[in-house]
Image (cartoon, rainbow, N blue to C red; front, side):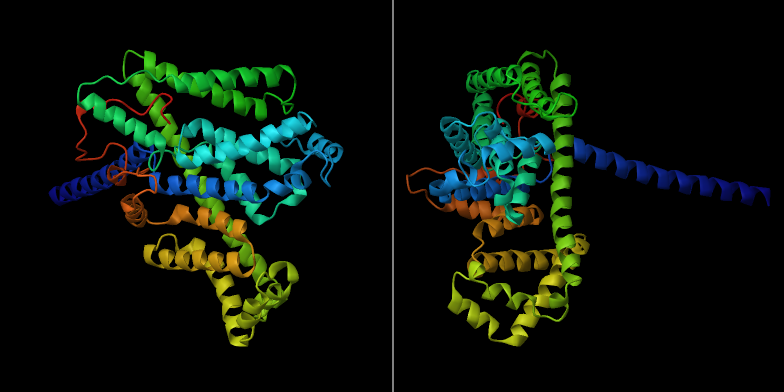
Length: 433
């Protein structure tokens, strides 16, 4: 009896040990994945491109009306904006001066940063300048925006903390060419553009700080954010160029991956929260409950750029009811389908199609573009790779290609990665992204 008891005890201890080993192994693999690679490189690239395009098109379209919307002599006067900013502590560089010249500089900077972020040129710096432009204009006239502007506002902040230039960017192309040169035994030249840009922005930040233009305080305020980002970028370059051992560079790469993955999770949670709250608020409305809510905005002059099309869509009461109930169902159900890939992809296609219809039928192109860009975080990697390959095969009008076939592979070290040992030991540090 005692022998059987001992064997049973050893079996139980062995089972617990095996279970503990499996749990530890799973946890170790999860930690390694979160810290060893910046997840979702294609998804974050699409988000970067999508919001840069949306904001750029909006700025270009409203260029003739920029004075009325954000200018010093707009309906929301500079004095009223100054009083509001003093109360809510929001950041906007347009409150630094009421001169027309300064307004034009900020507006031009917003356009330029959008173009460069779209192309993926110095994405770390351009993402900060993109946020600078978005916040400066939107916080200057808070009553000019809609839901799409709110999404751009939030995503502009989140993009600063992502490594959104890993693929489909000029930064990635420059890094790839440097790796190819090292593989051939050619040492790439030093990066002079990055340090120059960093130093120029540092001078401007010092001037704004000494002039008291950024007034939200050091502890947890905008000064902390801007100076922190500037200092981290400088540390990134110093460690990447001066460190004698790879450990400091690897540590910075791990921290950057953690920050990126946390920001990516926040972006996904934000998109789910937008749809969940929109769906649950719709459920409480009587027009959504009786299936007629879609009918009314289609007959408002402000939301009817094509009256004949609106009349045709609302002529069938059954269609109006199906679209009304379908919208609520999709928005409420989407966050619960994220763990079922097939159902999630179906609902994602439905929502993207719905936003495309809204852009045309209701005349809300920028709201729809912003929501489609936010939805892109959930697109499958395989689909995005095929999409990138299709774009790469389209010859450019000017005879060049922005995205090469080599960009289809996910970046970062993987098992079986054919990169050389020299390349694998060089993490992505410096001013390259």
